[in-house]
Amino acid sequence: RVRVVHKENGGLVSARKSGMEIAKGDYVFNIDSDDALNPGILSKAAEIINETGAEVVSFSYDKYIEATSKTETVHDMIEEGLYEKEEIKKHVIPKIVSDINMQHLFYFSWGRAIKRSLSYEFQMAISEKITMGEDLSLMSACFVNAEKVYFSRTPGCIYTVRGDSITQSFKTAHFPQISETIKWLAQFENDLGGQIARYSAFMCLAILAAAAEGGHFEKLSEIKKLIINSNHRELIKEAEFKKITLKSRICISLMKKEMIKSAFYFLYFCKIVKNILKRGE
Image (tube, rainbow, N blue to C red):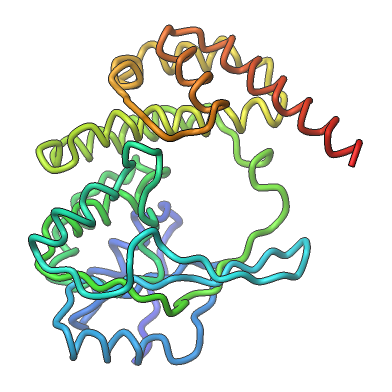
């Protein structure tokens, strides 16, 4: 019942393709190397599938924060239950990537039971160049094409948060990686609409915030070039949001005007103010 694949490290997409190739079950359940399954969750997935015929079963998850040894359950932004084709179009697809308020469904594919016949073609077609956004690439395709999906409030996986992921995670390579994800999402433009532009703005903001958090002033010129000379440039200008924080609104407004360095300094200033306020508590 256990089959092990020994292969050269080719990244997450490559690993999942290898697993998908040898999988024999009707459903695939991904789990990342630093996560754990909650007891009985595969039986729970099978129970839901047998009762509803859902092609995707999406679970909540338990987030364990190593620094504080605390665990909290995180739920997706959608009500528990079965969603069929018309309900998927109305309630699920508008939240796959980014809604008007910068909110979205879980991007990750781990902790979800996905019908192999639904996901195989898409998983095998995802470019191995995509190393940031690979989960969203798969889930966007699956949700757009599924007939039935089920969202459960039961936590399926234990996700461990180690250290200060924001300051450790910034890489200029993230900008072109997100560009690759956007190229993939473009094939679903008729379904996703303005979500793709919002995703570009949202992710560029997040990466820029990570750069500011880590004080990467030496990367500013490179960051500006990577945004201005890519598909992000026009998409950011197209992105429209409503109920987002004042901080996000100011930063995106600066990015729309191609004032990338100003947006960086604004985010860095926000970090300083936040640290001063913390010390004063």
